[in-house]
Image (cartoon, rainbow, N blue to C red; front, side, top):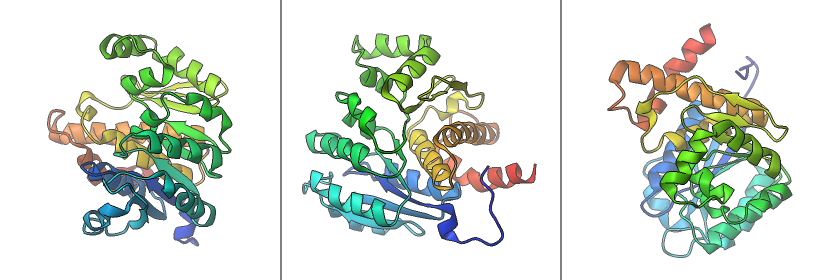
Amino acid sequence: MPARPEYSHKGTYGHVLIVAGSKGKTGAALMAAKACLRSGAGLVTIGIPESLVNAFQSRVTEEMILPLPDKGDGTLSFKSADKILGFLNKKANVLAIGPGLSVDDEISELVSLLITESGVPAVIDADGLNAIANRTGILKKGRSPVILTPHPGEMLRLSGRRRGIGAGANNVDRDRINTAVSFAKEMKTYLVLKGVPTVTATPDGKAFVNSTGNPGMATAGTGDVLTGMIASLLAQRLNPQNASILGVYIHGLIGDAVAGRKGRRSLIASDIIRAMPGAFKTWEQL
């Protein structure tokens, strides 16, 4: 776990830019941002379509907002690229992109450009993954490390195996380690294949199998929480491998603690965020 030196300030613990959200999907961005802060990041800014600023502004407190050009329908325009890259160059040291983003041609172009032009590590999840599903070769051209966090359906799309979502996703699950490792090595990226068990694979062919988590976490928003946690650990200067492994482990550990108190059926993603302070306090006292 990254140390918290006595003589430090918010800049010590990094600044994460989370590019996320669209009309009807604002919650994903907010959960990722809150999880990022609760995991120790010093500063979090949410980059959102400018037409949704009022909807977000009434719901954020510690988080900051970066309005970005959109197409007038609550989704980002490719014109937002310059503003995002400028912010990353001057202020943020980690990019997280994807939760609730929506997918169209402009967003696909935007995510691809950010991969090749951004000078900071990135975590790509959800619609960020779907945006590059047909252009995964772009991952080999990245200037900085990239962590992908797909569930089996997204992994199926990334790997190009479209034999029907049901059968294909089951095939991914039957060979989770080799699926993750082969993709990470080929695309020179870090990959967190979510599920049972979650497998973290690295570009040099390593695989780490997670031991925490439970079926109660199979609910909307838990992936957004994980994105925020991994991005936060990156911002606190963990390398991509360790940020991924630790983020996945603690995410599942907190989920297990919540399920122990509330049961698995009623567990929701915001329960994990609310349980973070107690979990981190316990961890730090060990």
